[in-house]
Image (cartoon, one colour):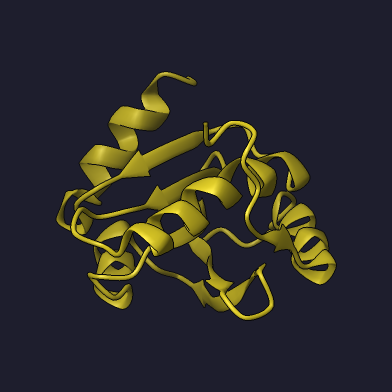
Length: 132
């Protein structure tokens, strides 16, 4: 059902930022963290981080709130964090918005993580290993 369900639109300025992020020139890791704005029914920018490892990234994210993350080690990847125990309404909003965001930002390496403690360099390397 989440394939066709779109609960939130993606802010146009966010789409442009994500497309530019594809061509990130810095040599360090970087992340764009997004969330949904329930009132506006939009996916919006939450935070941008430079020079951040997966371990540092997981410490930056609230445990109980879903997030969309575009992360650049190499290659660029999209991570949907969705831990168990959230309100069904919040889960549906994120699940219903994920595919639209991936499509609009032209993301191809898409991963989901349920427990943020699992977000490690090793986990990411294993996931990205498929693409090398």
